[in-house]
Structures are given as C-alpha cells and as structure tokens.
Length: 277
Image 1 (cartoon, rainbow, N blue to C red):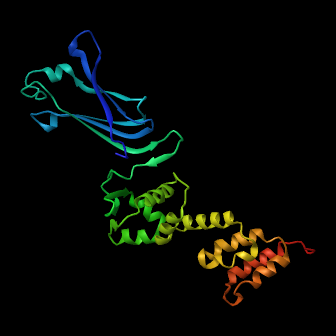
Image 2: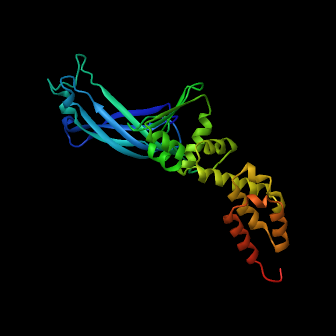
Image 3: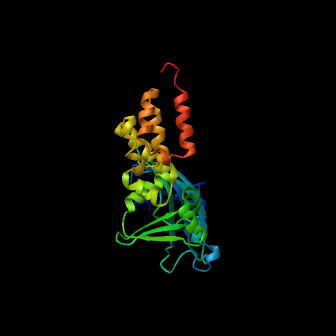
C-alpha cells in the first residue's frame, strides 16, 4: 500500500456503562512511518451464519501516522458477539476481523504529497505495466485524457493498459507532475512528455533549460530544432535589448521558412523599442 509494509492494529473496548455487556469493540490503526496518511479504513467482523449479519464499518482517515493512530468504535457490542447462537464465535469461541486500508496519498515531513499509484482503487483505471521491473502503476483515465492527446486517443479506442520494459521511477515523476504534486521535470520526464505530447510539461522543461543555459540572443538558432520553436522564440525575444540586436537575430534565422505569426511577433518586438534605440 503506497510503500507502507507494516501496520500496527490494536483491538480493545470502549466502556459505555458499568456492565461488561455495554462494551463496544474499538480498533486503532497506525502505520509504522512518520508520514501522514490519507485514505479509507474498512473493518469487517465476520458472521459464520450469514454474510449479511457481518458488521462492516467504513471510515475516512486523515493525517494517520505512527504517533497519530486512527481510532474508531464499531457498532458491535461485546454482548452481541458473546450471545449464544449469534454466529460470530467459532467452536473455539474466536471471531474473525478483516482490516482493509486504502491509501489515497501520503504527506511527508517536508509537506510533499505523493499519490498512491500502486493499488487499483477504482474499477476504471489505466495501467502502466513495467514487465522487466515487475511493476504496475494505476492512474485515473480522466487525468491522462485531459493532459495527453496520445493517451486520449488510446483511451477512446478502448485501450486501458500499456506494456513497457522499464522506467517506472520516471513515470512516477511524470504522473506526479500531472497531478500537480511535483515540479521536478528531468530529461527522462521530458522524453515521456514528448512521447505522449503533453505540451505543458514539454514547454516548461524547454523554458527552464534555455533560461538555465543563459543563451544570448544569437545562440538561440541551434535550439530551434532541439526544442519547440515558439518557446525558443519567446525566450530569445525577452533577451533582445535593442533594434540592432533584433536584426542580428533575424539574420541568423531561415527567413524564408518563418511563418506570418513569427514575423508578427518580431515586428511587435521591433516597435516596442524607443525610436532612438
């Protein structure tokens, strides 16, 4: 469950009166981590006579952590279980309980939010299968459909899973960006965004890369083939300081292939300078 391997579960009673028959069963759950967990808890107390008589308790859990256990009181009294013929006790006078914990996301000590891509929490999921790594990631189709025209086309055609060799770590970073919980766009994430034509991620990476490299206006021409032309043009124009510099930039371009829209942007930039510039 989202990387959580150990859960501490305690079963006790809440006394609502003087009689032991007023004792309600109480459960407390805590993961063996310092992260805060958000999700759902489902407790089932089985009845051996009929599944319909089993007691099911579902609760939403917030900020669950090792030092902040989640406690809840079931609707089952000790008197109900102990009653002869109730169906809750077996021949050894033992009863069975099942705990199901569904983690939606965790929040670490740095307030970084991580969604749970490891458990299939919905019947309608898109699946990334990494066969060499024996890894599976589950994602809501609507999220992928919104961000990627490539994945949207696959979903519209009925495809609900992709088989890949490896790269689960990079795909998790990619999905974190789509969920808005991460802004770490690596070159590997950029390659995934290009593959699925996620324009917002591609343009963000290109803009950050060009600003980080601190290109001068005349150095942008080589980036046109490497990155999106529009992105390179915007960064280039933001660094042009006068008309002469703009002329040199235009001379470095293949003027015959420049679109009318680009010519319009160049003209707007030229007329933005004072007449004496």
